[in-house]
Image (cartoon, rainbow, N blue to C red; front, side, top):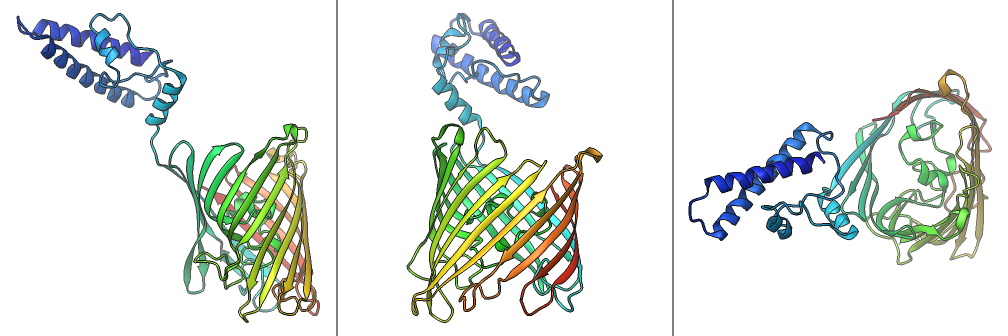
Length: 431
């Protein structure tokens, strides 16, 4: 209403000024042209004043204000003020609103953490980074970048900086452009966190996002049990299912790279594409519950030149309410040596339980997790993935954007080695 009143006043002043200052015998065309120029200048001035005064001066109106050049009807009716503005349909309103939205609009979110570890294992440990000794460790510096390119097209990227003995490495963890047709079909291309694990697509790299200090062993960054990253295309959306709230993800892309813990960013190592299917439900009657399962298939070329067919089947049951919080995932990795015909099955799972305590403004959250991976003898890919371990920890949210975490772990990697005991601390935050 403020803007309309200002515009009406501006139009009256412009009309009066033009009438009082016009020559005694003006032509109709010259008067109209002069009036249009004055109206456009005054409207620009109104917009500038609204921008300076802030949102209180620019209260939304039921109909958008359009310049005379865009709506000739307004120009013809302005001198007599019979109608301040012509009505617009809902479609025209949406078109004008989209035109007023600026694209692209980039938003940046950041995450970081600092860690400390100490164990009774001599030499380097496998706490945060393999081969890192006890002491302080600068965790990942993680940036999330999101930008809308139009009403239905968005871009997202995740970039991490990782401390190494010789400096820092930069990694493009995710780079995705997505086309949203509707709630039932969305198509995207790029580099993803492979959606065959709940944890892998729910928490990503920012340690502040997850309850614990580290990810479960079966989905750890740099691990090989599942392909953490995936390069290709992905379709996703809802499945009409009433209160069951089913959803799906179907992907096609490059499989593992020549380094098995990495995706084929620069191209696949063979002519066999990897594909995946993920289906899950979030029942409306049990808010916080998610149950789902997925399948992943690829053909891997080992450095020796041998080819191995890979099937990964997984399932999960998740309860995201924090009183309690329950996360459980099970997966089986099936490998077949195409030269010898031998098959290998490696089961893996984790179970995590947490509970946010009601005291101290609900800032304390104790948790426990058990991890298990057991590859069979002769497994050609998962040779160094064996792990059995327990984690007992406490998360303390010192603010809405920062947390302290402390953990005690008891774990064993090789059956021939003793169990390792260690304490781990982390401060993680988002900005």
